[in-house]
Length: 230
Length: 110
Image 1: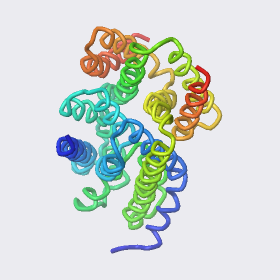
Image 2: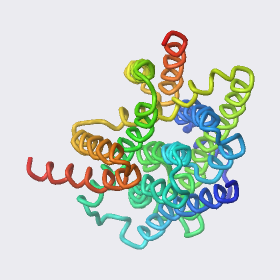
Image 3: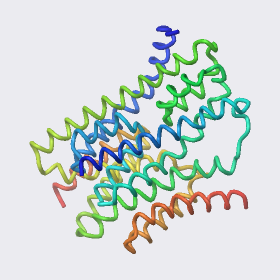
């Protein structure tokens, strides 16, 4: 049964995520405009995919002329880490019904998982589902709202100041670098360096797509082997 | 093109949803997901940063291949803005906007 108290508690818990999502969603809207994807494409993507880095990837790949099917598969590969989030939460969500799991799964992003993982175990069992839904709703709303605001602003800026188009096209590389910096630590460093070298070599040979797939498979492989040998 | 784009988005949306939902549903039948495969978990954890690194190369290398030296300076300044902003605020959105701002400013001079 719906619990307003638990839902609003979850919604309030989403505020730190909202603070992060609003500017990134805004940046995605701006980047989509910079890549000439248009407001509709930006909003449609955020509404249905709702996965930050992969949305940027999709727009960037399509902008570079990568075939749609390849772009879709690469984008899905980027989301494979989400496989781990459900099992990560399952110990604290044993009482969720199948329907509740299917509903809650949609909003399991990186940040929602991190907040939920650290807090859901401290709630009473009957509060957990609506609290998680409130948390996910706040995050989703801010992502979607940020995208609309960014897309409309980007569109207005470009239509008034056409010189801004090349500047906004820099949003994608900037986002990828920013995401990479936030993921960089001693355990990811070697995989990242390997992937950078591989992707550069493949890209300069004219095989960008193959380079992304090679980096996705060989980079983590090298990272794991090196860890084992330590 | 638009229809193809919509199809691609819907395909990714369904795929992403299944990636999130299937393990969540299956893990409920597995003693609360206590069983784990550390090497596979680590592989997926490293896969995200590896793919983002590759996407960074692809997104930045195309303009570098085709344009002149001044563009290299613009990109370097934009990236400097991203790095400084990341260490100051650690917020991806703010870092992107700072990077775009720095890139735009250098466009006026180079």
